[in-house]
Image (spheres, helix red, strand yellow):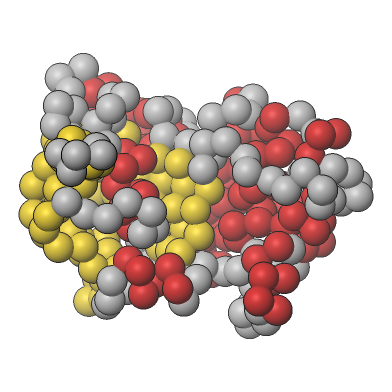
Length: 259
């Protein structure tokens, strides 16, 4: 992580929605946040606190209502047009007429785009996501968890500089979820991408994040940010059974009860 370079900078950011009359419904209010390049930031908070709203603003899917939002030294729209940002949504959005392998490779097919140097191949991602042997199947032939893993692989193939993940493992069983958490950390170390990861799992947030941001609701705002880098070291690794991590989880649980 390069603390002197920022992937995302928000200052006084208000984000939300406007109705047909132009009236604003503010979801995030007065949001101030800097995310360093290469950082793994996890985000937790109660429903309606703006976790997904913030990711959508970074992805240029939701224009800010006011304030400033900088993404990779430019606007969110600039980063989107360069395809520097990939988004994994809560629900898989696969093309039903394409096989698993062709869904994963879709970003490289659009506009005949050349894969970035060092980007994982379709076969590597099939193995990583536990989908080897399923490459010729169609989405209708997969379980919900398998479809979501295809969506994750599709986001990773372009080796994005920023990876936005909105509860990507929520539909998976605990053992698969733990394994994919470990593989995601390995991939993060390999690529150096900046990751913003929304989850409702306190364990997942604490285990994955270099920092954990806790949001409060009504309106959405930053309640606390926990820096876990002194605990995890430069490679972000930590045992799930580490008593210090267990203590962090207890603190996060107590804070969520206040939000």
